[in-house]
Image (cartoon, rainbow, N blue to C red; front, side):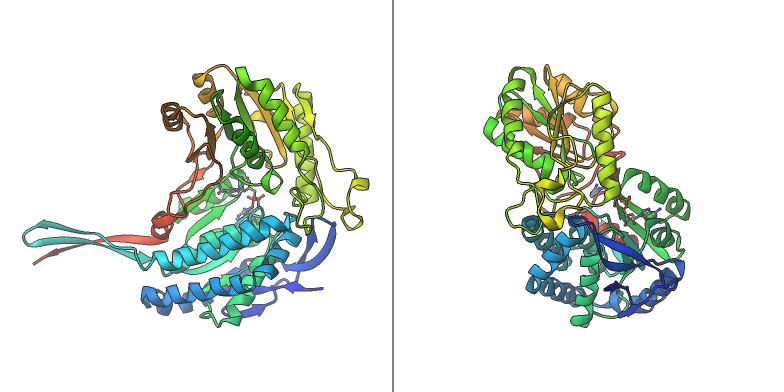
Length: 483
Ligand code: NAD
């Protein structure tokens, strides 16, 4: 069986432990590859390789680094189908999503930061006639990037691209649940002769390989995307070491539908926002707040639309809903549906594992859940406060603008919101009052990579995207010259 080994200093290397983790296809339940179970010894080796590569990579001019990142982007583009198939097999997401979102966005991440560095600038301040201040932005050294399973290559490249572009050498770890496209990226590096040691890809569990990255004294910054609890653990180790930290964490996002919204568009987009990637996107709208006067009409249209989602084999190009990422996660999502019922929730559609009789033969042991819509739950119950991160959404009526804002802001999270109204003043007013890092008006998941991306409250610390990401990976130095 294929072994996914670590990529260190330009070579594929077995983990010191010689142990491997089984990698399961969530659509079939079958083990299809083995992932290196790395520990601190592997991280130490990778850090040494990265330190050796740093002087040349960091001192090269921006064009040099840009050229290498663009080569990597081109390689993926030329092998898009191979990457897309691997992403779907590893994660269970529909192939249409891997082809149209995940892999194209990974390519875009690399090319975006490869070209952004060609346009970045440092500031100068002419303080007085004979005093000039300027700012130097210098790479940090070796940095750690740790990413989750829901958008594997998309989020992996979203971190490593700005880190590399700004002159750092990287130790990167994908999720142990979805390591395959990161492994293919290491093959891409070898195929194009990407400079050795600049990007090192380590596989393994979070509590072992991930924790060793966070605790390594020579790793200067940690860029992490994942769960809020993991973010807390990472911060508790990295903060006392005074590492730079970027934390992109969980969400419990509201889709707010006012009575004056374009209902057809709102229903269509609210379904996408709730169920894309089986609801496993940190930005998914898992609470739909609906103004009283259109509640019944919206509900009927919404549920009807959800029932048309085509669930099945993720490799089928017509599938809308694939498999949940793992058995453990499937159980977690199902346990939240049980909780919702205990809390008085009423199921409008879905609510259970997909009957294996309804699945194609090869998917009978896969981890499928019916897209689930629940109503009749108070805004402050656990189902409406905790992140489920699956194909489950709730419908909650509200009386007026103030109540909509109160409900939307009521959770510990603050990642994103989507607001639906044709009243421009109301849209701006509500957007300003929402305690989230991102607000979409009459849209969802429309992304411009130049904008700051991140959350407030327990959704994270710091911003990714644009120059924010490039600057996170640099240390600013003020140079003051008297002449
Ligand atoms: P997770 O926190 O379990 O794991 C994320 C990564 O961290 C994995 O690579 C894992 O191996 C590693 N890890 C786990 N424990 C670690 C530790 N102690 N030290 C270092 N690394 C460790 O998250 P997940 O289940 O993979 O992803 C789902 C979560 O990610 C959800 O909460 C979701 O909202 C969040 N997420 C947030 C964003 C965002 O941009 N805000 C984007 C995607 C996903």
